[in-house]
Length: 324
Ligand SMILES: NC(=O)C1=CN([C@@H]2O[C@H](COP(=O)(O)OP(=O)(O)OC[C@H]3O[C@@H](n4cnc5c(N)ncnc54)[C@H](OP(=O)(O)O)[C@@H]3O)[C@@H](O)[C@H]2O)C=CC1
Ligand SMILES: O=CC(=O)O
Image 1 (cartoon, rainbow, N blue to C red):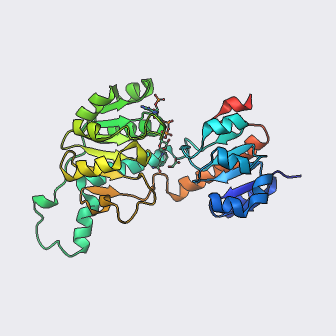
Image 2 (cartoon, protein in one colour):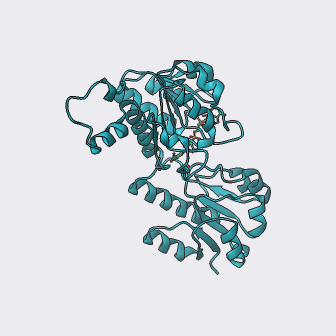
Image 3 (cartoon, rainbow, N blue to C red):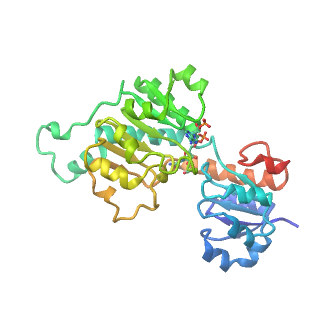
């Protein structure tokens, strides 16, 4: 008999067929308390789940007593309680690598867009304000040769360093928990402590996961250490930055501008003051959102689930210790 799984994300037809070949699939729209209650019997039987978003914690695990594998269509896994999964022996799979270049492209796009005010001036053109030679009030600031600080020198941080250093001649500073020789050798990146990163970066680019240690790592005190000309880019997770402190810093000129792909609450509420600030570029969490990359992530998540449920895990596992 095929193992039962819950699918909580729409997949391209070929990938859905591949899942059907291996499993008995119950498809639901989202993973939340309501859908779990609606499909209680399917969750009772499920040995695997595949999707993105939704909280998977100890309470959820009680509703899925046979669960062996969770396969997330994302690299970030802050919505999973990994300790609870470990206690239950549930394998957590994710999709690193396939999205790295696309997310780094998005971060570079945010750097350029925020510095050159691309969205703001394009809106002025559409509004019919381009009536003659533009003046200094339309100008942005240079990107090339400025110091780019990377907070979180993992896969995405490294790909951003490549773009910024080789493409834009930017000196790279970075902070992570440990030094990264590849970034230092290939892109001449200089390791520094967080304070130095804050004080010296023209662009502070955040590619950190959300953990207990990184929650609100950037708050009022840290923003106050940045240059008043600095631009903050966040494509890691929203809660790494204290959003109220960021709004204050952007309003009172503590920092110059921000380019944000992630927020404390997503979707960003339309009432958010961030949306009223001309020096903010706000994107709807599109870091990996290209057709090619989203297909690749879904494909990897399907392969990950098949591999893990058949006991053949070779890569993409968050908690390999439960396999032993
Ligand atoms: N906006 C979007 O659409 C996307 C956002 N993301 C986000 O980007 C994150 C990073 O992805 P990826 O690069 O693949 O992950 P990696 O695990 O490769 O890199 C994470 C980096 O963060 C560093 N780090 C972790 N905790 C701390 C800390 N407390 N202080 C300093 N540095 C820390 C790690 O340090 P060390 O190397 O020393 O261990 C590592 O360098 C994801 O977790 C996700 O949240 C990812 C994809 C898309
Ligand atoms: O935010 C996206 C991810 O893959 O993590």
